[in-house]
Amino acid sequence: MAGSPKEGSKTAKKIITALVLLALSFAILWFVQRLFMPKYQVGVIEGSFTEEYYKEKVPHDVIIFGDCDAYESYSPVKMYEEYGISAYIRGSGEQYINQSYYLLKDVLRTETPKVVVLSVHNLQHDVPRNEAYNRMTLDGMRWSKDKVDAINSSMTKDETFASYVFPILRYHDRWSELTKTDFKHVFSKDITSHNGYYMRCDVKPMGKLPPAKPLLNYRFGDNAMSYLDKIRVLCEENGIELILVRAPIDYGWYEKWDENVENYAAQYGLTYINFCNYKEEIGLDMSVDTYDAGVHLNIYGAEKLSTYFGQYLVDNYDLTDYREVPAVAAEYEKDIEFYNFMRDDQLREIEQYGELKSYGANAIEN
Amino acid sequence: MKFTKVAALILSLSVAGMSVAACSNEPEPVSSDINIISTQSQSSMVATAPSAYVDPNAESENFVFTYSGFNFVVNTVLDESQLPDDYDVFQQASCAGQGLASHYEFKGGSFWVELYPGADSIYTIQILDDTVTTAEGVYIGNTLDQVKAVYGEPSISSEAVVVYEKGSSQLWFGLDENNVVNQIMYFGI
Image 1 (cartoon, rainbow over the protein chains, first blue to last red):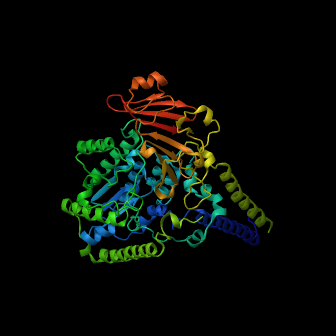
Image 2: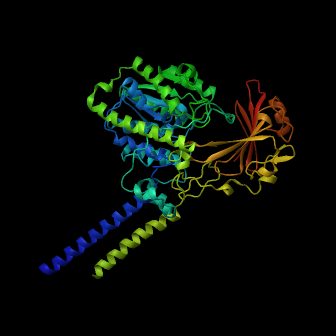
Image 3: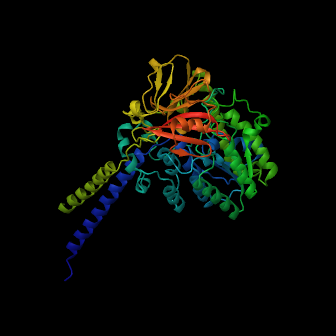
């Protein structure tokens, strides 16, 4: 027998109530998850870089992948200003080469650059070794099969896939460490990089660096090399020129590693540029072009390298001069404005305090 | 109304249960990690946890390097107040705020001592010239045969390095193409 209209109305009310409660619970969970996740907006901003790419509104002829060697050595804005090159750095802290591969696949979902530049510094790690760096690269990646594969190929032994799907599983105990930045950026984040470039305007002259440690052997690991192969093949399949580069930083690199890359490049007809060999032509002066005694370039060093590398790119590849494309140029004008604003702000702080206060390690909130 | 209360209770328990499950799944720090992850620090994700790198048995079980009467042992706390005074200190930040490692250069560069990032215990001791020796008397310029005569067969060997293990320490001898020691290094493991 069919129920009365009154009973039907009661049932519908119960179902609606349950659905509303369910939706409310998920909304609360989602909000708490957003609140607890690290924001990477001040201090350690490198965790923001992966997701910032998705806010780009212009096409890119050149995309650079890699770790700090990539995102601290090249200034895409400078390359645009001088040559009209539209470039982006998909770099992140200690980005492992498997992650470079999946980030390249991720890029190819929306655009096909003419040139892919891979900073070979990340060949030194055969497999990912550090969860913090995994998180900085992967949490901001847009969900796709590539992100799933990137996570599965990156997780260290104590990590779980579920904690990437539901980051609250990883970050839930940050409740006692929340800062005003966490609340301010629950729903939206500011851009912190300049087309993926990490700007530093302070100067700490090249100093004495700890000696290089001996290694068991100087061959790159099989896993790392397999991902280099995958990147090469992916570029070939998509008609992309692949360039291997090494930033002009002597620290953390071995001659035998260099030979390995040279041999690989020769075997597959790739270009490999170790900028350590071109410091003089680039005009680098490590008494003023580094902010941390020679481990990374500051803006002065990065702009010199960008001028040099940009010239090489326009001389050797058929790149579009986007200064002649009004829609793209209009976007880059905004990028230049932001670039100049941050540079001037950093210079102001350096003049006022003798060091950066709102950027870098001094800006880390505790 | 009764149904609503039951539904709310179930949902609340689900959310609470998820949190409890998360707590029980929290990865434990791994002693071999150079950078220990902590969800306690939003910015750097790095815990300053010196104790994580200290091996209570290190003094008696690990290799010891002695200089000017001071014993350097990896995985023990470096007591700066007791150090010989001919050293300089350099601090080096890891990329993306993952800890600050202190490096001590002794005797004008004859050997270096490095601490774990964010900690005060010794991670490596690196000997770079022949003015200092291991506690067992091996120095840069010795041959591989001389190393083996002192330490025996290595635990690990490659074309470039032989490695000996003791307690939570490793002693590495870097070799040139003629099997002559060109670098000596103690590692904490």
